Amino acid sequence: MANAPLTGDIAKLWDEVLASPSDDGVRAVLADLLQAAGDPRGELISLQLLSIEDAAALDRQDQIQQLLRSHGGEWLGPLRDVAQAARFDRGFLSALELDVKWPAASPKWERPLANRTLLTVTELPHPWSQLANTRGSIYARFMTSPVMSALRRVEVFDLESVIGLEPCPAPLTHVACTLRPPDLEGALIGARILPEC
View 1: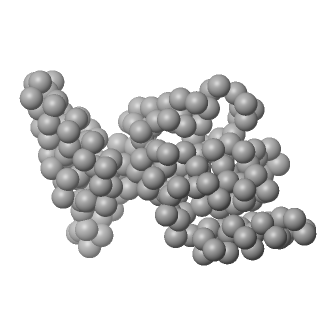
View 2: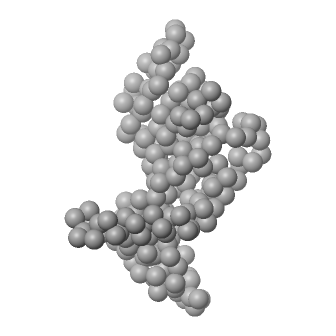
View 3: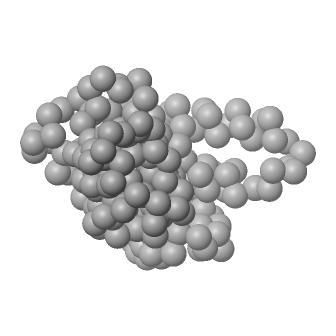
């Protein structure tokens, strides 16, 4: 168990990672402190920060998968209730595929939408397996959430998700469109998606 100063240092470094998600130096220091405190998240961060050329790449991937199987749900926190799939990179959540099992108006979306774990998400892929039941307004709410500041890649798949692009505060670098839209949607794509590209 970590002592109080270590816990304070961990909390401060954790906030620094969330504030500067591209700084691997801060992540490495956080990994060391977490490992010293016996937290397996430190091992995940360390393993995912290793170079691809590492000689033990297969062993490393096996260990990463074991850590994610054992602790991934805990690391997702309230997002595990809305995650159909998730990916961790460099020890933090980087991609989240939504499971749109609740109606758009459900209050169950509020807690996940405000979760700080979203601060490191760079990709919000389309929930392909739920194509018939997709609720674009839910996807748009995630896309426009203030905590999704690291978001770079999105997929728009219906009119509501296209409309969600306009107020999206994140500096997107990739927008995929799966629509073959008629008139109104075509105009929206020209006005909202093409400028993002």
